[in-house]
Length: 402
Image 1: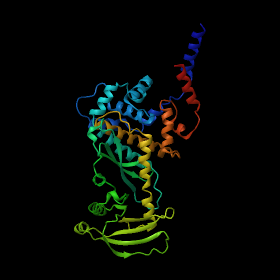
Image 2: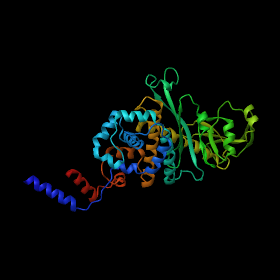
Image 3: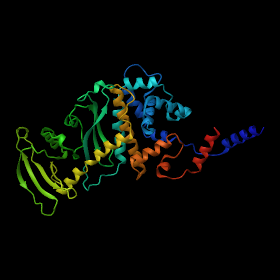
Image 4: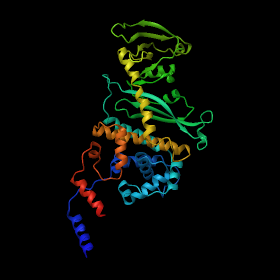
């Protein structure tokens, strides 16, 4: 009798108490991906028969949850989703079998998530803050990093000396440091071959290392109104046309306008470039830069190359915090799918940071989400550290009754 009265009281309170229904934190993150845009891309990048036991959206939800929660295997991801039960309905997904998820990862093109990456960056770019320099040109760093694989499990990814790997090429936008461009290639693909496929906006400045030395590409960039800053190779042959004054700067060794005199630069009629020598006051190391930037002073050119270190930090961050070292499938498509979803997850985290104007690092945001993915909390309040409001407490109480 007492138990029946308690149940009636709970039911009456649940019907009469006004409350705001809060979505799970994971659902609020996934709402940043417009569902109609995703379905449009999924239809455009579908092969074979219509999927019956799983959808591309369910695949995206499962793998994104795996990235945010740090799940290590397909079995781990599927078990975690099964534990949520009815909550999957609010994510627009449903329970998936491990075999179905593995089959979709293997067979359905990863190009869907490559296209999604491009659309997420465009949304992220509109919210991003500016870079730290006084000029208005867009600033990018480009570089690549090897993703090590097991030759026994991934024989198609043969690299060298009994090793297997793939190469991730990234163009980092220095306005907030989200990845702006990305390409996943075979490990033997040269950096310059991948760089030629990237399309930068006119007037942008690209910072890169010595591995991207190619005079034909230099000329193509200059003709498109794109600037670059790189370190010069010791073997390059040049002639000094003009030497600029270096008196105001102790660290500036020289500032010259030079013309490359090798056979290839002469054949393609390469325009004169700028050669800047700089001595690091902290380490005493000398650097020599080559650039087609003439409208900025020499110290700014040196600081631009120093800013290239941010892309090294990006590779370190993504390998330490997202799952691109242990893979859920052995096929090339499955590996590329997982990498593209990791990059999309990175953009979602950056969008949250920019939209809420958070001081947190992406690592801090990721850790908060990992602990609260299926908790019904206002996502902004969670990220800013605001304690739960009355609506949150009411919702938690109702969950206890259920």
